[in-house]
Amino acid sequence: MVNGQARELDVEVRKTLADALREDLALTGTHLGCEHGVCGACTVLVDGRPTRSCLMLAVQAHGHDIDTVESLGTPDHLHPLQQAFWEHHGLQCGFCTPGILMSALWFLRERPHPSREEIRELLSGHLCRCTGYLQIIEAIEAASGATGGRRQ
Image 1 (spheres, rainbow, N blue to C red):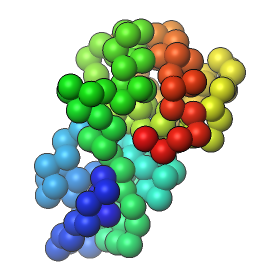
Image 2: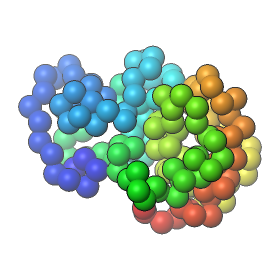
Image 3: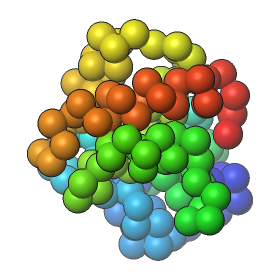
């Protein structure tokens, strides 16, 4: 399942999940940065847990539920987390944003009311070169009451 829909692909065994999502399913919200699992831009949820899709082979995803940033909301109806990022200017170029959103979604389900230090720890696995992180932290704080504990 990808974003709640049954999907089946024939892929080479060496193709990463990130490449399969982008190239074969046209889910281009998953971004590729370092392709070494360091930057976090390619983070998706696999069975509800954050996973670096550049480090996972597509064939390993067989039988698992994959959620990408495209699963969150629509331009007309943003997910509460997306709305908080919009309102708090938690993005500039937007390259890192999809991975951060997916990690934050999981994080807020696990910790509905996190401390600022816990949010900083979450963000330590993501590289952002534009915002300086303060607006991202504020956006996650703002969203904490809106998304905590519920599957959106």
